[in-house]
Image 1: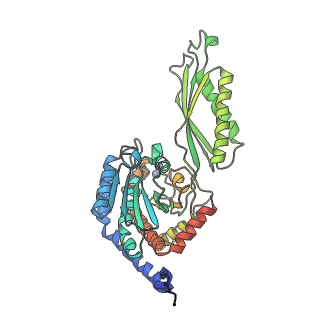
Image 2: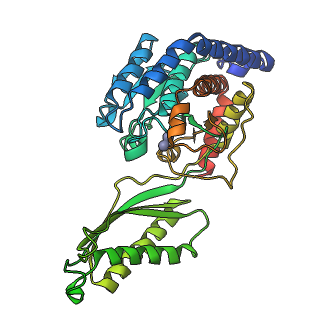
Image 3: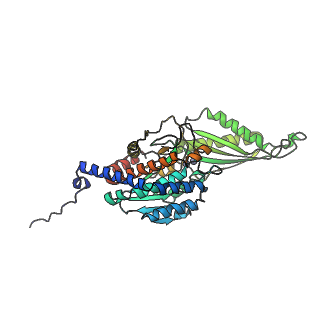
Length: 412
Ligand SMILES: [Zn+2]
Ligand SMILES: [Zn+2]
């Protein structure tokens, strides 16, 4: 009896010979760029509307409504208030694998408004998601535009990561406006610390010997931390402010308070540094007799793990738009971002897109103006195009996705 031969299905590479396949992806890339171009007015309007209605973390109800509305009008299915966060959302298009997430931030800063340019992040994420629909239709996969609130103040992505928002995501990407074009960033692990000292108030001249000076305890803590600073690792950072230093110069301060931020290159060194910093406060309490109370912030920002395979794809796509984008200079400055927490779970990138001159810093009033300027719009459109082109690369090349995942696993 003749055995029935079941033919194995042809792989993508067999269906599409190499050249034809890459030509196909190039055509799709041209198409996704065209999709962004076609939506310039709407994307710009979305960005400017968010910019002129700044909302603080977890209060971004207008921005979330505008963004989800636009996604819905463009064929995305929408889930609002995901993971018990009223201003978080997920827009989905397609059902296949890989599932690629583009993350949107849309929170503003107290007093400064959109001085971090999150209005541009939001509009470019939504624009990229919509523009890459032809890539999903033609090459498969699915695209998720995930709205992640409260980056600045509460680490929304860290909370969402803990609650499983990225469990079924294969790759996560976002862009952030800045003063350089870089495909990678350096972001440190980070945690905040609130400190209070309680002393005893007396007349500062009449009976100083009866007082316990809570301000002196705080000042000694600063001195101890500054002494320690010369013996900590290069990239670690400790910085703080005094939020209460007493009532009047003729009263020995009975209360002092401060807020500190401790940052390190990895979580292990962050833990070590936290203990050393706590010892500075404990020592100051012992020296002055003030009572110490301190609380670590709930959110630990994880360091950013840049996926280099993914970053280089994005870099190439940005270069095709005429931007001289590099990988981040190891000597350049570094902060922290809740995208670090996402990057610990799935292969991720957080490239910076220049909308400002090199010397200008985010979180300044000047940067807030640029976030609503022509340079800001150009950054928005370029970011949307490069993200959408990178999605085309990913859904068109299963082997590239495999390499990205391999790199991620190797770095674990
Ligand atoms: Zn910021
Ligand atoms: Zn930001």
